[in-house]
Image (cartoon, rainbow, N blue to C red; front, side, top):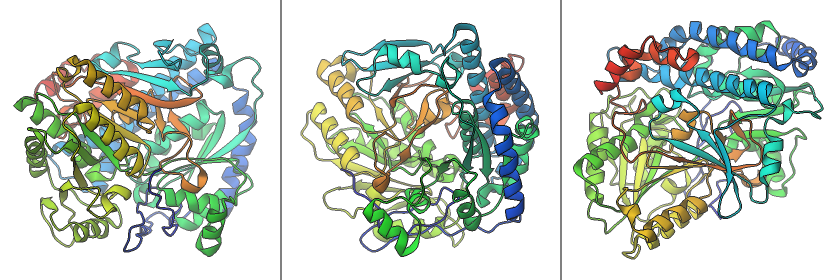
Length: 600
């Protein structure tokens, strides 16, 4: 059983505030200032009235019309993308001329376009064959149904060379049941239930809210009211342009405001379902309420709402490093991979590297730490645009006196930080129970027996029992290590046992989010009183049900740098070409894209 942080004071309802209970108290994310005036209650009521009226029409919209709507959305998103990406990086204070200027091409419109393209393929398959047609489906040796969702075509092989992703369904679900439930809302016998969903947007990554809205619309058959988070509310007009066809047809409305707006909407009679991206405290505040009454309801397990609430929440993301015969190139590659998942978006990601788990006796352990340090040292300093970042960073610095900082450290700075050599039996719990939500990562050295299988068993126990969250984790293992049957069996056992919604082998734990086609969400089964990283899945473009977890396998090293590596030039130099490739399948920009890829 993981350590709970449920005694933290519930805070903001708008998503992405972070914190966790520790021995010396709790941290509550400050509410950001609002530059756009909150939408009036009268206007919110009017928006919900329109959505309610259009909900019936949406449930009756047939597949050809939905596919045509997606085609429109692809074009409108392509048109809105340049301004969207530019405004996003400007608001984050990313300096001109730096490679990070390409970051929001990738974190924003590129992923939304990929989502649209994948949904279009699935709807076309349903129209032509009667059900989604993922690349493969079989039954594992344990009887568990496994659905392959990547690669699904030449674009996947070009963007994600050597990657494979399979979705494991809940034990006990048969292959016949799995196939019958795929894309259920489009199958014969489905009874439409016109519903309005409230999407409470995250403030950190601009693709989260639009992709959550797409899932509500095309997977769950709900029209959507999207409330922007005050942190990135400046993107609301651009998301409105990207999704103009949905707005035109009364299927989407975008509103603005902070805590009070969120409370008004979550309690509104015209809202049938809620999806939030944020922290467990956001979820608890919505489901149980705030203040003394909310805490008492939480303790009693008595929700105040009778509507479904799904959520993607915080995570102390582990990277398990399996000892092996790593070369200098291997160390450099994975040093950058691990560091890049911290430096991406200045560390304001729920899937950022948080705890690197190593064997204390591994001869290459120190060398890998040096490779990570080298990447953090060379990273461009980032503006801590998310509220409370300096305070959270100071909290970690005060707790761990041996923390190492990389970059400027002033009153308005939050340098990238590594806290090495933590002992879970001796050191304070903060790094294990609290997501920093800034540029902080830790390293844990386990004094496991020399056997690699025993180390892996101990690492899985640490992740499952001590680390907060159930969203995503990764395991890095050298191919030559897998030639030992005992190690290969131990790695597969670790994949099976890790209680995370996604387990990524040999690449960043965030890869599942970037792939888009797999389901994205927490490992199922957490009760509302100890929600961990959330409940429910999004993305999931094959429209699968009964999902347990996704297993993503990537190459130990790729021939060229992946687009999320901090030194990759692809998005900074060829962002529009990536959009054309992902959205339209166009190869016109391939020479420019290839040049940027070859340059690093």
